[in-house]
Amino acid sequence: MMVYNMLFVVIFMFLFGNMIFVSKHKHLLIILLSLEFIVLSIYFYLLIYLMMFNMNMYMLMVFLVFSVCEGALGLSILVSMIRTHGNDYFQSFSLL
Image 1: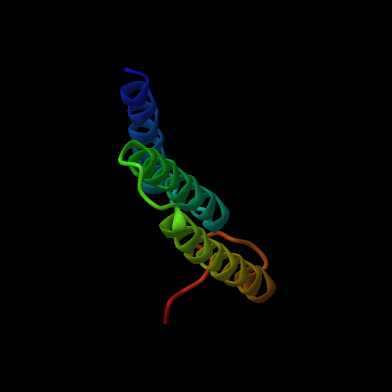
Image 2: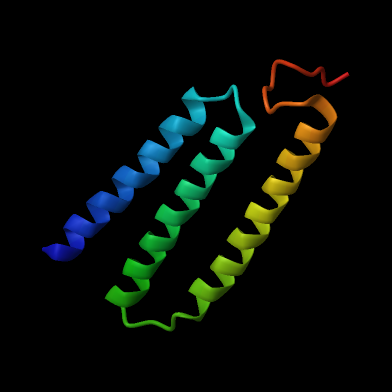
């Protein structure tokens, strides 16, 4: 019963992160934070899934490595965008 409650919370976290990702598309920082929130909910889901079936937790370490690389890449894009354009608005620069 407790596992189902935890799965409900994880699904709610995932849907809430997706809702923020879709609705707040003006700032790059908010988009990156919502993506990290989605990655955190996927991590919790994998943790519950692997614990439920008594499997090895090595896959969680691989997932954390890739999520840290994704976060570092997003922050480097944010820093380069702020250095070149002065802010993180998507409407302030042209893709051409």
